[in-house]
Image 1 (cartoon, rainbow, N blue to C red):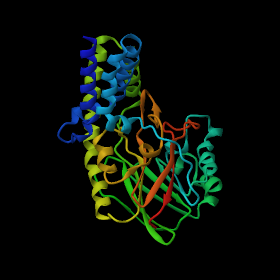
Image 2 (image 1 turned 180 degrees about the vertical axis):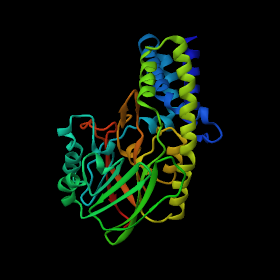
Image 3 (image 1 turned 45 degrees about the vertical axis):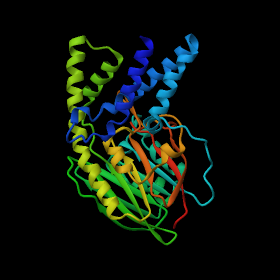
Image 4 (image 1 turned 30 degrees about the vertical axis):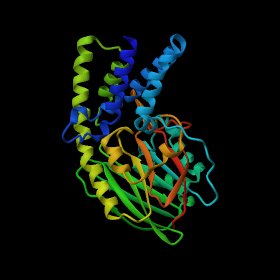
Length: 348
């Protein structure tokens, strides 16, 4: 019976691991099922430990499960041999800065800017970078002298910023419908060659603080059974609708990249979706996910209200080789952790 349960868990993990093949516009309620993948992964690990302690020969079942599900397992939780970035690599930083305001008292609100200055990245893609929370003068005084080139874009309440040590030649907003999010494509000059940098902030989950708290209570098991059932049903429907809105946005970004195929490309930002999702698969197609290619572990980049998932990304075209990608958990002032990667250009 236990062996059968193990096999069943593997089959479910396989199906859930390929849920990114489902288009949320057609299957909105199933579109977020990839969020349960880590739970299934943990179950298979527990089965492996159990069999090794009780009946070692049965450990072959979860071991084969990891092989069968290798693709989604690596997507969610990659394992790589660390390599130092070679000389001449470009350091890229992507960070949702929560309008710089952070969680701390007023006198600590420049910590995010100080962090950005310490990183000395060559290209910095920021989301939710509205300067009103801290003041443009403060931003310029801390990071302005490090970056001779800067471009900002605003759409409704959203604000995006690119800091660059390379000349910014042009910028354009990728056209798609959104209540207040956007994707912006910048063309910069690296070693005399045009490189497209796409900064994304796709449709948010649109959950209020109270709704996020309910979700957190649900995860902790602190809700009454009737309330938990109603909350679960509502949450599945709500998240499905938001993912349904993100799907055509991801399609629009993918079309833009296809139109500019052959041009060196760096794609960054807050996708607001998990690694096992239609959005991630659509945008990452024909690109290298720098985290999957070089990092280790799940790389949780969003860490607020019980939503612990990697939704921030750095991707690159074949013109670059990525090194040492990481989600930096040393700074907790935003609801996101920054993601950093080094890219070695070899076709520029």
